[in-house]
Length: 438
Image (cartoon, rainbow, N blue to C red; front, side):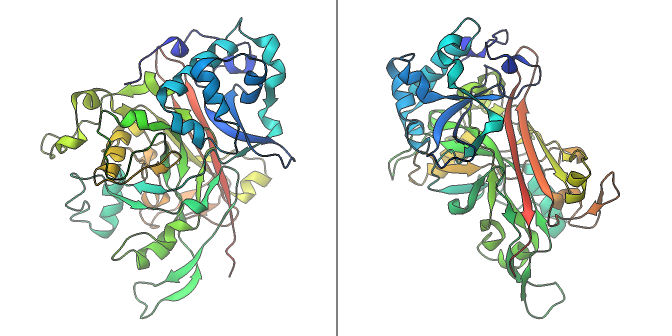
């Protein structure tokens, strides 16, 4: 397990004043990585770190000779248009870079040398942080699986394998977009329960799914496996993930092989990757299963994992309708799911992914599946909030929704917060829905 060190000190302050503001997503204890270009430019994306309301251009640290050793090599791996080469290096390089950046950005650090290496976030366009070769989406929240299952199988919501195996499907990497990219309503085959034949039409039951995204670091050779206690060395970091879902298309197509067009039209991620090391203060014991639940099979558990395999993350999902934005109204928060209640950990997901010999590669990506807590205000999808469309959400301006309409913007955020540790945030994952192309 990544240990606490000087970079996690909650008393640490930065010479970048905006990083010291209470409630800031990107204090000096965070230092997430991303790729950016200046607004309006056609430049290739460059590696950067978020600090307060600024981005630090990593190459400036090189040109000014401020880095050495593994940290210098790590920044050299950010010179291309993606972070994949950095992800491939492994935790020793990531940690060395984090430590030296923390020292440079700390109060009394390299302010004179690096002031001109900062660009306000308002003046940059964030780009896809990685070239995602493969994308897998899990189904790791027992609360979500139970809530969704009750809509279709009231007497038996969980399928027999759920508590034995981390369930997942392989998604579509090419349609993953960075926050701010609009998402077009998909077309597909639709079949009403009382209809004899399906028809082609635009999705009428468009939904979001509030998830945590995980970027893979060093991979494994085909045929090799990654053990549960090795898993964290293969995780570069985390982002917020919106797994858009066309519920009516899905209901018709998912039998017998599962999601297809209902999921492959768009997925939205936040642009900043919060590193595995930054999460060290927020590691905790894994979800405590009821005593009558089956124990995980041996390859999915260990003493270390039981004690520190959980992550204390709060997420938030909100909707701003087109009319709300036009009237200057704030988005309405629909749910605040908590990650601590996930039945399967991010480490179990990765280990299970490789147990048959599947070879992961740097920049591969997987999602946690919809995150839902045990309370009604902790639900991560409209399917659950509206009980399959039977109940409406009412907004302060009188508008109502059961599922999403064109022009709606979905905004997801996540953060970690507790006494004795600095609050760290993940930034926003947002997208506006465009009409379908008939």
